[in-house]
Image (cartoon, rainbow, N blue to C red; front, side, top):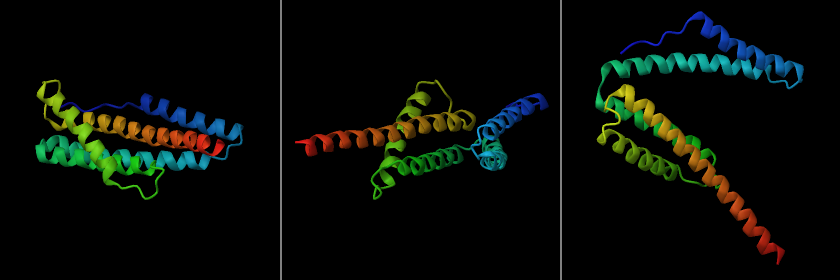
Length: 159
């Protein structure tokens, strides 16, 4: 496995985008420059931490460790999807089961068809993308449910 090389030019260009966002914030008097700085610091810390964890998992090349990472991804995606649930008494297991099923079936098809191999450097990123798409679909379903209920309520109270 080869390492990703990030040169100073790439970092400078990315940091330039951050500076551009801060300049726009200042010009438009949005008051979010402090939030941008904190987000950049938090992102750098998270990426360094995740980078070290993934480097260890990729080097270990253990199927059980890979599956554990997939479960961590699904757990986090379930937490985020559940936050979009308009029903505050919503259960965590509902989005988790939906994510587990959709990601599991798709990942199984990809592995069994030979499209990807059961190695951490392929399974973990693909499962992250699948979980992200399924999490977005769950969020859209929650939003559609709210719109449907609002339309239904407006018709009920109109008559």
